[in-house]
Length: 172
Image 1 (tube, rainbow, N blue to C red):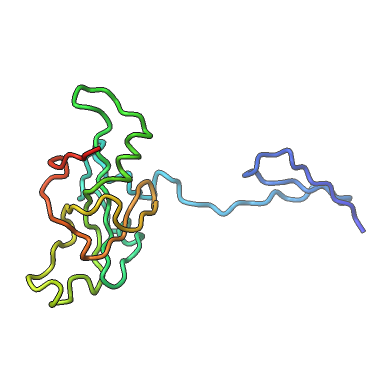
Image 2: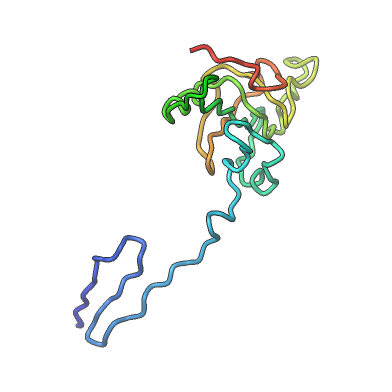
C-alpha cells in the first residue's frame, strides 16, 4: 500500500499535484471552455442601459432560451432607467427591485398553443413575437438566464401592446 499526500493549499479551480512514493503525478487538466466574452448573453442585447435593442438578440441566444410550451409566452422584462431625469444614478438594488415589479416586457417566443383557442380569443392573438407588451406587476414565472431575467406568462396575462416601454411610468 502506498501512502499519498494531497496538497490542498492550491486555489479551488487549480489542478492538484499528488505525491506518492513513485513521485509527483501529472496535473489534472481542465476541459477547455469557450471564453465568456465569446458566448452571447442577454446583457449584450442592451445597446445602452436601459435601452434594449431587440436586433442584438441573436439567433443562437434565442435558441438557447427555453421554449414556452402550450399557451405560454417567453417575455424579457424591461429593465427601466438606471438614473433619474435629473441625472442621479439609482442604486443597483433599486433598479433590480423595479425590474422585479415591472409591467412591461418584450415578447421573445410564443408557445405552440398560444392564442389558438378561438372561443377565448375570437379576434385573434393579443400579441406576437417581437412586440412590447404590458402585463400584471408580478405575473408569470421569473428566472435568470445569461445576464438577465426572463418570465414565462400565460397568453391571457397580456394586458396590452405598446410601442415604447419608456412611455409607461411605473407607480411606486
